Image (cartoon, rainbow, N blue to C red):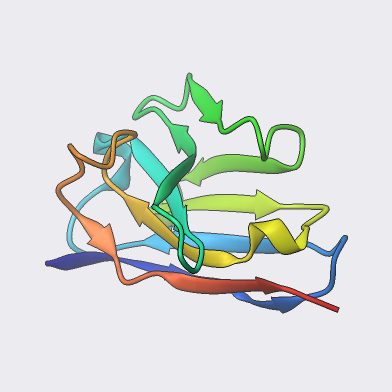
Length: 118
């Protein structure tokens, strides 16, 4: 059951940037750890980043450290994933979910496509 809405994906050249948003009108995102995950074609879903419910802890996959930044805007009930210096290996459908562990996440978004290509 989709409860989250991702946006901000698109086509970008290598080295470019995108900011993904995760929002919902169904509940308060501050009450949850929020994770970003991605699934590339032919690959398994992988965890990209996560932010704790108090925003005091953030985690990143090694492949995105130093390039991606996760943050919250409580006033907008949103969680963002700022993605810089994108590479073709970042091409995937990106999902947000209400946990850092995809096996425990109860709510998911429908995903947003990110394509990095020249």
